[in-house]
Length: 194
Image (cartoon, rainbow, N blue to C red; front, side, top):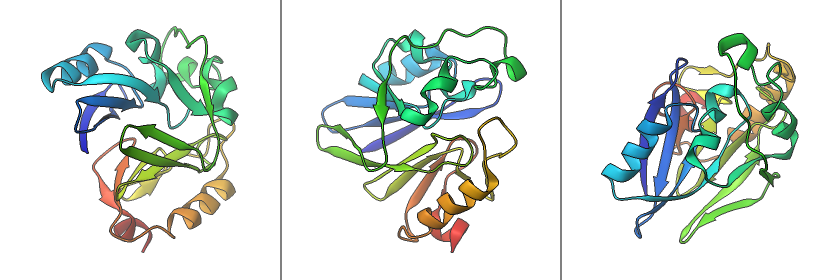
């Protein structure tokens, strides 16, 4: 497994491209700059198969349509994808075209690409439908957990109590688990939650 990071958009979100040994990949949180994401795929000889959104905020979903791939998102964030007031488009951006259809994720679902399998961990708090992807010794944490911080809880649908519960759940993962957050540098579970 290889992980490529592309920093995208005005809010400098981390878009991740996860590839396997066969040159196939999936994209996590293409928040903007579809051209940069395509260039990373092309430069590394990768074929993207689908997108996983860790949550429905605009800085993590804005390039979904431009990439033209199937999109996965947690069922509780489906409604905010198409609502500019809830996905914070109206706060940070002008207009936005949401995907016409998304495949819905639930807690415990598996996201699989050939030999790569990740478990969906529902981590509400930043949004109702925030998720992390866990597998192969790594956690893609979206905006639930950062290096030296956690996601904001002052947006519509957010909850400080829920994010605390989600962090307790993540604290049960192995301390050496590498965390790839939605913004900023990578970290580990042990460093952030130990």
